[in-house]
Length: 404
Ligand SMILES: *Cc1c(COP(=O)(O)O)cnc(C)c1O
Image 1 (cartoon, rainbow, N blue to C red):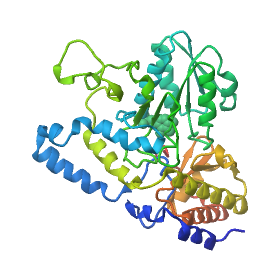
Image 2 (image 1 turned 90 degrees about the vertical axis):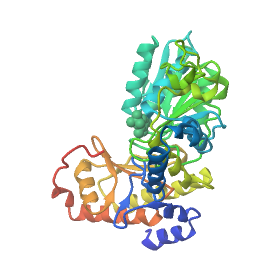
Image 3 (image 1 turned 135 degrees about the horizontal axis):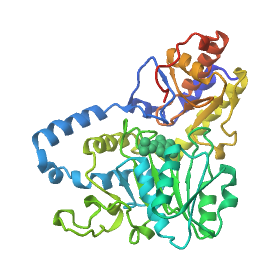
């Protein structure tokens, strides 16, 4: 049986332990939801305040030049690039994950005009399925949705683009990025990855893929509604067509020409004026990854997930661990199935353990290697055990709104 001291000693040996000090976390909370809304890096409020006061307040419109707001989206993209294994100049921040996916998947589809299928899997996040539906409609293609384990066999000669989310938001199941990218390419298709549940939690290498997108407010801790990011492999940048032509993607925006001429490079992914204050917050939040090797994040994440699953096996009855047990087949969160998931999570949150639920019956526990302590895992399972022993889930009021 694992005991608390096992997790305490993992914390003592944790090479990333001091990263936690870069965050402001409430002392009475075990936060296991960094995969849904990353916590606040401690220095971000000061940075945002000074940008608002000085750059917006004092310097006004001059800040577009003097503080280089104009290039901020691409500069933030260049800071995300090393976290996903992308070269400089291939990533741009901005818009939402949904919009970024629409842009890159449309661009990918247009690069394979002789094929008519966009392939994805049914485990994909709903907004991805909706956005890909829009891509198919606009690009006169068919959206083909197969079960995650059927993707390999479904990559046929009619497939223009394979578009998958790397880590499943519900179960934590992880697709094999290198193998599927290779399969797609052998079949003559392009490969697009959604890294929403991966970037910031593990080492990634998208450099062989064609395009990718990801989320700024999950493991990257950019704050609620933070700008997302899009990657386009440099080999495609010259021919990539942004489905939404806008002045920020124009070769010379201030020429104010009546016809559209795309910018060179990744800047052609931009559409309109970006939320500078949100970009500033994301830019500052990325400081917490300075000097951090993504493979060290992955090593810690594996230990956290492994510890959680082992404790769940040892101490919990009536739950099913739906997250794959093979480390290479999973991401950085653990999902447990239980018929009373909603009430159990409400009882946990009332006791200071914050995870979330996904319908109908999954309790989800994000284990973000950037700030998590190993002892958080121990605390969470111990309190969950208590909730079950006391049947505390019977006594919590049903949550007023959706538990997101
Ligand atoms: C969180 C998440 C999103 C979020 O999309 P937004 O447009 O930023 O709201 C999209 N896709 C996946 C796979 C996600 O996990």
